[in-house]
Image (cartoon, rainbow, N blue to C red):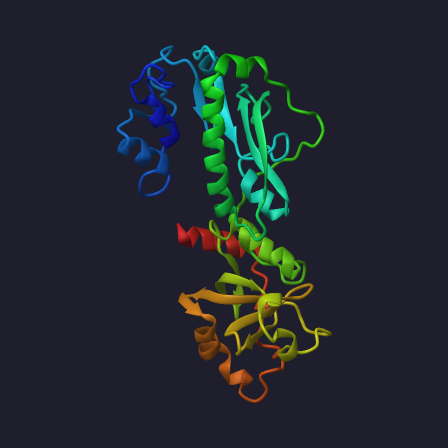
Length: 323
C-alpha cells in the first residue's frame, strides 16, 4: 500500500492518480494493519462487501484478501483485478503459502502477480513471476517481510506497463500444483512420539509467530518458545545420556548453556523459554519444576520429568480460553 502511494504524487508521469482501500471487518479488538496504514496515508477506506464507487477505477489489486470476487465486480475494472501472491504458483495455492513454504523446507520461493478469476482462488494466469532463495533458518515472519517488499516492487513494474504486461500473461502450468490450507491451532501441538527434532524446529519457524508450540507438563498446557538446535549447544553430546530407551518428551536441563533439552522421535531439541502461567526462562523452569529430581544425578532421565502430547480437544479448549 505504501509503495502505491508514492507513485500518486502529482507529476507528468504519475502512475497512480486515485487510490482507495477495501478491507475486511476486523474480528479481533483493535484495527487491521491495512486499515490503520490507509488512514495514516489519508486514503478513503471501504469495508467489505462495500467496494466504493463502481466503474471509476482502472484496475484492482488484492493481497491476502481471502474472499472470492464476483465476475460482476471484476468486470467493473477495465484492466481486471490483480493478485500479489507470495509463492511461485501453482505451488502453494491457498491462504497460507509462506507458512507451508517454511514448514516443508522449500529452498526456493517467490512472488506471483496473477490475474484474478471468479469462483476459484489462485488459478488465474500469471502476469509476472520472480523467484528467490529461502534463507537458511528463516522464519515465516521473516520471509513474509522479504516477499512483501519483492511483491510491491513487482506490482509497480507491472502497473507501469499494464497493457503490455496483460498481453504477455500465461496460464499456470498443470504440473506442480500444491495447496496451502489455513493453519489451525491444533498444528501447534507437538507430537513427541511422531516428530523429529528437525521437524519440530521447522514447525516453530513456520507457525511460532502465530501459535507458540505447546505441549503438556503434568496435565497443564505449557507453551515452548525460543527453540535451538542441539548442534549449536557447546558440549551437548558430552553431557546428555545415551539416546537408547529414552522416551520421547523426556526433559533434561543442560546447565552449561542453560537450556531445556527435550527428546523427540529422533534427536533432541533445545528450548530457552516457556510459558507456564507466566513466561519463564529455562533456568527458572528448572529451578521451579525440575530441580528436586536432578539434585542426585543431573544426567539421569526421570520418568516423571516429561512433556506429553497435547490432544486436539485440549488444543481447542486452549484456543477458546485464549479468545
